[in-house]
Amino acid sequence: MKNGFPATTANGYDPQNPYANRDPRLTEFVVVNGSSYGGGTINTGVGGGIDRLDSIPNFSTTTGYYLKKTLHPGVRLNDDGTAVGQRHYDVYFRYTELFLIFAEAANEIGGPDNSINGLTPRDVIAAIRQRAGIDQPDTYLASITTTEAMRELIRNERRIELSFEGHRFWDLRRWGYL
Picture 1 (cartoon, helix red, strand yellow):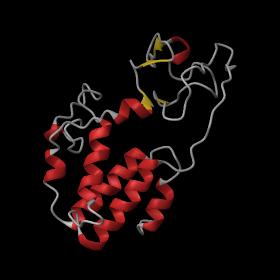
Picture 2 (tube, helix red, strand yellow):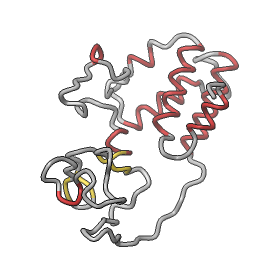
Picture 3 (tube, rainbow, N blue to C red):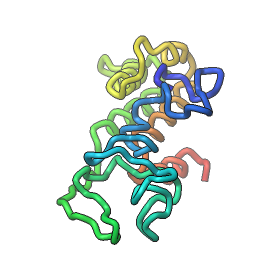
């Protein structure tokens, strides 16, 4: 949620209005129904034209969502399924990933407030969440006191920040879930 807490009804999540007060990264990474993108408003529901579910076989959304994170806003699908091409550059290593690796390692060594050269895992996660638009002060982050709780928060931040970049499978293997 925008307040930093997990998305549960107890923390303000409304199933009737699922995009209200959510972590701002949701609409930064995914085009949801009603989003403005590429010079227009995306409507994946009834009357959505080429944006609606399954309007162009093998090209349009089958889930109601479009991936926005690695998409160039100038590229649009046409009614016939052709696309207007644009140059695209793949990113292989992000600055944020470097800090998440540091936070994970520092937390495992000494916990959420373990300082290495003046930087703690809590500082790193706070900076990432503040840059993402999480409401400040981040009371959820402030409530984290154990290595285990910070580990779960760091893993969740990796899941969100590095989504759709090919890291999740390898993270799950490294953490022993697969």
